[in-house]
Image (tube, rainbow over all chains, first blue to last red; front, side, top):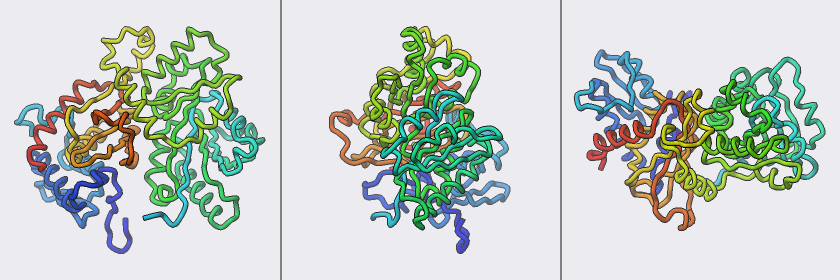
Length: 98
Length: 350
C-alpha cells in the first residue's frame, strides 16, 4: 500500500493487462470490468465501485464496506460478506441463482 | 520505455529428494558457463549438504538452510534475492546476469513462484525465466504414488529433465514418458544420459521460455489432450487413478472477451485454485491481433504476455486454447461454466 495516499496498488494485477491495442482507454476498460462484475454481484445484493483506478470498493447490503486491491481479493471478500461460496461452476446454472 | 536497471532471469530447479538436481548443477555450472550465474541452494534439514556437493562449481553459491523453501524460508528467499541484487549493484559481487534457484526436494513450486511474483521489489529486479524439474527415472513410481510434492513439481515444470534414465529399461522409460506427457503436456522433455551433450542440458536450464516453442507444445497438447480419464486406453492411467489428476485442453470457439474471461478465471481460481495445478495457454482476444499468453500455478497467475511477431504458421487459425492440469475438475464443467458467463455477460460488454 502506498504510504502517502493509502492506495492498495492493485493496478499491477494480471487482470489489468488486457488487450494492448484496441483504442479503449485503461480507464474505460476498468469501468467495463466493474459494470460486468456488478452483473454478477447485484444478484447477491453486493456492489462494486472503482477506487482511483487502483483499487475497488465492495459494499454489502448491511453496510459493510471494504477496500480491495484486485479481482483475486474481490471474490474472497464477497464470499466473506455473503457467508457463502461463489462457485463459477454452478453460477448462472439456473437464472434464479441467488 | 526501457527500464533503467537490469531485470535478471531466475531459473527454478526443482525435483524430488535425490533426483539429481545438485549433480546436474555441478555438471552444468563449471567453468565459463557459470561465470555469470548466481546459485541459491535451499536445504531441508539442520545441516546443509548440497552446497558442499556443488562446491566445485564456479558460480556464486548462497545457501538457504533454514528449511524447506516452500514454507519456512520464503522471507529468507526474498531477503537473499534483495541482498544479492543490492550487492551486485554496489559491485561487491561480480555482475551476474542470471540466477539459478535450487529448491529442496520437498518444496512445492507454487509458494516460491508466489514469493517471486508477489513481492514488489523482487518482481522489479527479477523475472522467472522458467522452471526445470528433474525427474528420477529410477524411482518415479513410488515418488508419484506416495508424495504429492512430486506431482506438484512435475506439473509446474516448463521443462522436464529425466535423470538416471540409464538405470531403467525401455518399458519403464516409455511408461514414465507417457505419465509425464499426460501430466504436463506443455512441457518439453529432455533425457539426461551419459551420452547427452552438456550444451543441450545447459540450454534446458538457461534458455528463456520461447513463445514459439510454447505455442508448438500447446498445439501438441491440444491434439493429445485427454478429455477424460474414462476415454483413455492407456495403461499408465491406472497409476494415476488415486491422484485424480488429469490434463485437458479447453478450446474456445470465439474470440475471448478479456473482461468476461478475467471475471470467470479469477472466480475459478478463487474457488478451485487448490485443485488447479497448472494452466498454460494462448488466448486470442477481441480487438487484438497479438495473442495473450496465460500461465498460472494454483492461485498464482504470471504476468500476461502479449508477444509480437508470432509465426503465421503457428497463429494461423487463431484458436484460443488453455491446457489445464487439475484434480477433480472436468473439461465439460469448465466449458459449460464459461459459456454461461459468456451468455450472461458478453451481451452487455460492448
